[in-house]
Image (cartoon, rainbow, N blue to C red; front, side, top):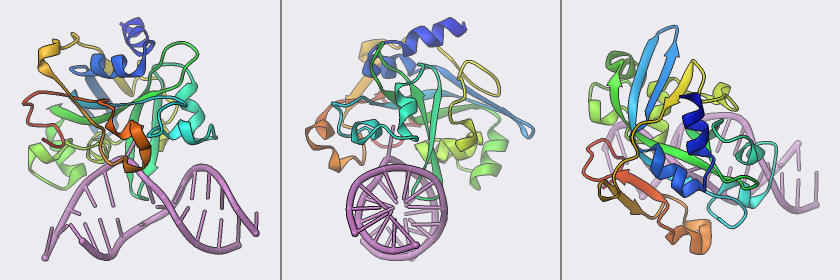
Length: 195
DNA sequence: CGGCTGATCGTG
DNA sequence: ACGATCAGCCGA
């Protein structure tokens, strides 16, 4: 079970990204448990991917992208939101998968309270939103995602026909890499962040 | 569309 | 030390 996530994350980042679709993300806190199904991800690679944090420089913050597959890379964006990534890459490479959207399954009331909305579709349909709903902060940076209190249970890899590939969002600075089809989501799923 | 917000990182 | 930048979200 734990080996399953490690094996999934130890392959080229874009393949790991696809394979994470359908997996279950669980967060336990003193306030309760929330859980959901991953429905949208983006792959961010190593030196060759100008959209990726680590391609600019290997720094204290970004070096985790080259660390052990299966760890969480959580960072603060725009001063107020967090983004959850899963370190994933082939041996000797670097990369991480951004979890962009989740379909809420468990702990809906807690999610609603944390998010300040009653609309289920607005709870987890964005990387900052799902971190808010799941209580994910920089404290989870470096945490191993096979372990409580924040963990991922891989599911069946979705059939290729159910997966859509698209350019990644908000990386205009990434040169030619901005056109790479490294965003993946489940076709027709209503909890995806954008159509 | 614009405002919010602060860690991060290159520059001096 | 300083300033530019930013893999978002919200409300109008």
